[in-house]
Image 1 (cartoon, helix red, strand yellow):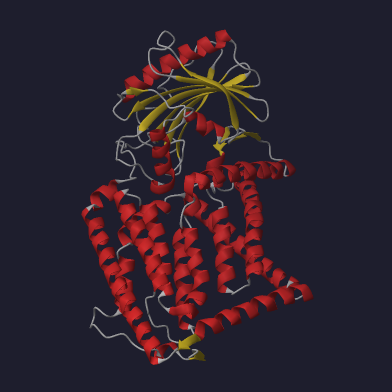
Image 2 (tube, helix red, strand yellow; image 1 turned 180 degrees about the horizontal axis):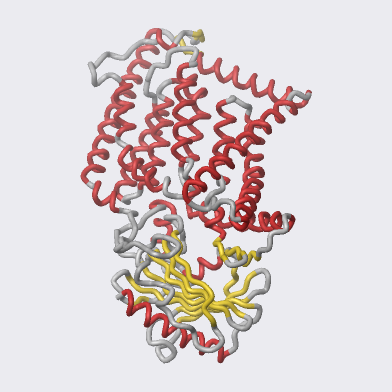
Length: 565
């Protein structure tokens, strides 16, 4: 006999046999979520240290608020009934969680939580899933991009915003020179990343637009256009914020590149950008009020009603078929209970491996001492302006600075640098630390717009220690000559990696570091200290100039090594 369809409230569906507290599926759901918290906590600690993800806690609060709001607005009471689809998602989540503990990867553990939450959401039926799915999709914005794409994208944004801001400064008549990633002002040089640190990042703009679209329950097309507009507005505000920050600093009004003024300036720029996004949303509402826009919205509304109707339809079958359905429900619930035990086992595994997982990604630990320079960096009282002598020949020292970068900077957390100028070239001797053991100096210049023309490791007859030499040029035709020497934290000389020839093991280690571990290393091994000399100018160096640069670099390396080790 054919089965008939009727609508019944979720709360009136047949209940499984009660197993006491062990049969409370809501309690089991809470246990599954709690089993992810150790790794997720580590991940959020690291993410919040990165400038482009400093908005992550606020995004998380918005997601939780939207989840609670939509849960309360469900038309029918949601009852947790595990099914085969939800069980499959939980199996995937359990596998990812086990892999994250084995690989000591908080990033992968956070992916596991997002996948497991979808599995738990499916347990509460089609209506709850349809209502809460847009909010669940926002969770992916909390995850850093793989392959360090976010870091590369940040460099692109800094490059574009600095060029746009430089154009505005030209209009305002401010005397300045933008040389790559350094802004030169009369009597002061500013790294672009320092100025950009106080500007609300593009990632925050995209996240705000996505939250706004979900909160206001905009359609798919409307929400997509709003998020796309956030990219445009984010880039525009980055350029304007960069120009304002430099103008305020050069005029002597206020330094918005550090401290409390930086936080207030960043909050103000984000608030302004949020108002512009709200205005853009109102503009899209006006545009969708046109006939074509109304047609699209009506089609989306009809699709939603159809999906809701399908979600509320329940198959009322004859008694034998209902018995089979009940048996399937019991089997699904038993599998759900076993999966919860699996999550508990992995949770205890996390606790047992907490010290290993917690130390993973903390980075190299260098003995820190107060600095008397421009930034509070380790070794600041050892490496001073007087640590290096004047370079031989026409070189003259014109500047010294210390710099503290973002925690995940590929140039190292700290830098101490001496700047020299010659007849037509500029030279910088820099000590950068701590660097990841797989740091590639050539790659660090390539992502900043330089094209490496040649490279080689100097022979023992040219340099008695391992040194990487490479020549490069940028899009504007400027030439660069770089010498790089690296040592471990303990002072042992090592050969710098050029990253041009990699074995399969090197490739796998790089993939694991970039995708799975994301903010740490497989082992808490010591990092590297890099000593480099970079010479830039309009013309390439001749053989005699390269020999003089090598001798000057040799003396600098010997002096810095003597001071540090």
